[in-house]
Length: 406
Image 1: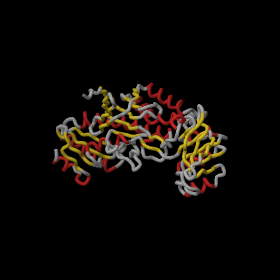
Image 2 (image 1 turned 30 degrees about the vertical axis):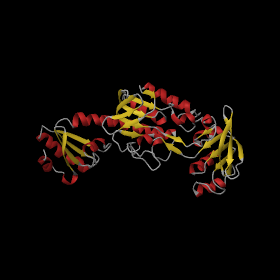
Image 3 (image 1 turned 60 degrees about the vertical axis):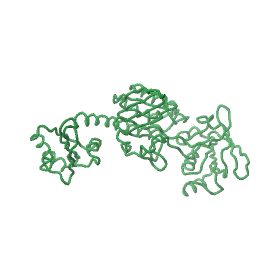
Image 4 (image 1 turned 45 degrees about the horizontal axis):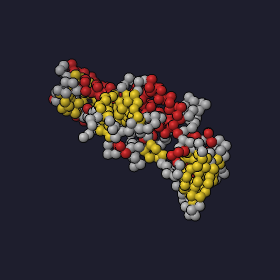
C-alpha cells in the first residue's frame, strides 16, 4: 500500500541548489516569498568542482567555487529560504498550483523555478569519480590561472575543447590534447583547428582515449590508450580538462516543458517557459555561455519574474475575476492606446456595476495572457460573475461594441 505523502505549501519551489538556484532563492527570499530549494546532492552544484574563480565580480583575489557557493548559501539562508536535500521524482505543472514530488513529500507552489543545471559528459575511465575536483576539471575559464606554468591535458576536439585549450595556453606551459580521431581530423570548426595547429604550446595525441586516471590525493597522471595499437600512453599533467560535452538535467520535464534538440529548456528573456508560472535559469537553459555569472543573471530575472507572476495571480483571482468587470489591455507607451482609456473611463462611470481594470502590457504580459491567450493589445475583456464572456479585439474595439456586450 502506498504511504500518503506529506503536503507542504510554498510560494516558490526552486529545483536545484547550484549558483542559479541559490541566486533565485536570494531574490525570492528577499521579496518575502515563502521559498524552498530542493537539491539532489550538494548545495552549490557543479561550481564546487572549481578550484579558483577569478572572473566573478567582487573577488579580485579569486575565490574557490566551494567558498563562493557557501557565501550564496549563507545569504539565501539569511533571507529565510529553506533547503532540503532530496531527489525530485515527479512534477505536475498542469494546474495553477504547481506540484513537485519527492519520495516522501508533495510540495505545492504558486510558482516553480527550474535550476537543475547540466552535468559534464564523462569518459567513464578508471578512477574518474575519485579525481573529479581533484585534478579533473571542466572549465578552463575558471581554472586556467591555477595552471600557470604547468602542463595540462585536454580531452576532446570539438569547438569547446580546442577553444578552451587555446585559452589554457595563455597560462599553462604545455597543453596536450587527446583526440579520438586520426591525425588531422578534429570535430571543431576549421578556423579553430588552424589556430590550434599553429599554436606552439599545443600538442596533439591522435587515436587516443582515456584508460584511467592516476595519482595520490590529487590526480597527476592520465593513462591514454592508442585505439590503433592498443599501447598505453602515460601523460603526466597538473590538470585534466574534459570537454566532451554536457548533458542537461531535464529528463524530468520531457513532454511538459519545451526544449531544444539537445534537451536544454527554452525560455524567453524573462526566463519564462511555455508553462505559466514555471521559470528556468542557469545551465539548464538553452543559451550561449554557461558560467556562474550568467547563472546569477538568469536567476535574478527568474526570481523577480516569479514574484511578479505571484502578485499578478493574486490580482487576477481576487480583483479582476471577482464579479463584473471591463479589462482594458493596452500598452501605456502607445498614444492611441492611452486615448481609448477615456472611453473606458466613461463606461465605468455609466455602468457602475462594472469595475474597470487597466492592464498595461508595457512591462509584463502576464495578466494580459491570462485574460486572453494571445495577450494582444489593445483589446477589451468583459467579465460577468467572475467569468470571461467576451474578448473584443482591436479590429472591433469601440465604445458601442463594448456596450452591446455588457
